[in-house]
Image (cartoon, rainbow, N blue to C red; front, side, top):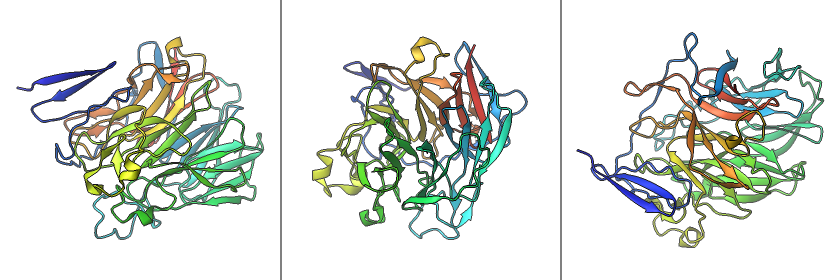
Length: 430
């Protein structure tokens, strides 16, 4: 028999299983109750992707319709929608090394060697009548190096490869970009698991660009010196000058967006592995200029990682507690604020988060898109499931696909990339 204890802290409720000391934190305040490190052993449960057959599709709440926006893509990872409605998709994936480090346990360790599921291109979909259904598909850019983040700014099309940011001349009517590129900035590359992704976003004025760079390791096990310019959000000028660290201690930040009506940047962060099933919660958080978020010395504020006990108490003491916990090992990647008008009122200015799904947990977690309501630029409720059905058979660890990026079309519908199933889904309000 399993007994549960409920702890009420302000507006949050945490559920703790006394029989196995298991906690899956998923709160929207900063009062998150966490288990002790190693309360459960670290698990490796990899999902088996079986795809979608026939008319199968993810499941949205009542009042929405889910359809296939595009299929047959090669690892469609990230999305960017331009002001004229063109949809750009970065098709890129993790790489398998020729030889792993002797001390590297994670079989997803990546390096600059053999490609795995990485087309290294950006594909464009053009919807001329703006009805949410594209008429034309183009191979916009090719021969890139694990491209991820994209940005149109000042008549340039920026691409964040895993090792650099490039910019190409941008002309709105072009369907293929044959312009000569400029290198904007070099970035560190290689490293643990899927930490090859580099996202970019400009501030609303277009005067600064922000770049996510994930850690080289799980928890700096190869030495903090190997983490130069990593586990950070960098800030640069559009020409690459003025580089500085905007925020640090962010193990693997991915999605970024600005909260509507504010000047506050938000990001989705993948936390560390190997502390047990329910540590450490992935999260979304507002990003403070100069803020430190704990990695690798502490997690979720000032909870000390036992692998770095007593190493940097000065940094631990100022570690910022993230705003919203999203569950441990959910691989929360995509992030966008909904500023469309076709969804019901409750979704206006709220946040959608794509969860790619776990591998370091005994039971599959994530594999869905969640929604976080916002009011006046701040979270106003707990995360709730929005797009589900990706897990086909939990007992067999079978999944139809794995969601990643989320983006809003001009007609207000929501796009979701499903990189494992080579598909982009469209969610439309009825």
